[in-house]
Amino acid sequence: MGDFDPGSQTQQWLVAAKDGNSEAFARLYEHLVPALLTWAELRIRPAQRAHLEPVDLVQEVWLRAWRQLDTYDAQNVPFRFWVFRVAKNVLLEAVRAASRRSRGQAGPSTRMFALQNVPDDVTAVSKRLVRDENLGAFQQRIEALDEEDRALVVHCGLEGLPHKEVAERMGLTAEAVTKRWQRLRAKLEEQGVPGTLLAEAS
Image (cartoon, rainbow, N blue to C red; front, side, top):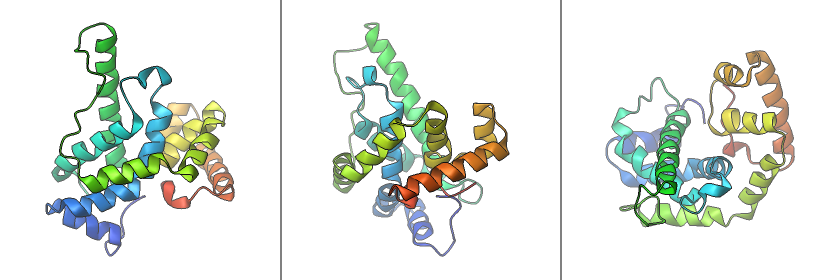
C-alpha cells in the first residue's frame, strides 16, 4: 500500500478509525484482507491447519490491530507494514500455542482463537474471500514459484518490506531484489493478478 496520500480515501478511513470509528477500520481491513489472507495461506503449514485456519488468523489480526490502533504512527510507518507486523506476532503466538497443544500442555479445544466481537461485516468479507476463485488462483501461482520467488512475493509484495531488509534476509543485494521483484511483479500482473493486492514499490 505504501505511504498514504493525505487526501486519499484510505487516509480518510484511517483518520476516522483512529477517532474510534470501527466501520472505517473495517473498510481498511477490506482493503488489505486479500493480501493478509494470501499471506496466511502461504505461511500456515499443513500440519498446523488442524488448529489454525487462515481466515481465523486474519480475523484475529483485525481484532488486535483495532485494539492497538492508537500505537500506529501514520507519519512514519506505512499502514500495510504495521498491519503485517501485527499479523506476524499473531502467527508466532499461534505457532507457539499449537506446539504446546502437541505436547499436551493445552486443553482439548481445536479452535486457536475465540474470535469474540468480530463485526459481522468483517466476518462476511473474510468468508467471501476464502471462496474467491481469483484469489485462490493467485495463491496457486505463488505456490508454484521457486522458493526465492515465493519469498519475494511474501516479503516485497504482501508484507511491503523495504528492499534493503528483504536483501539482508535473502542474502542478495538491494539492487538485485529490486530488479527481480520488478520483473516478477510484472509477470504476475500479466497473469491477471490485481496490482492492488501487492504493496507499492519501496
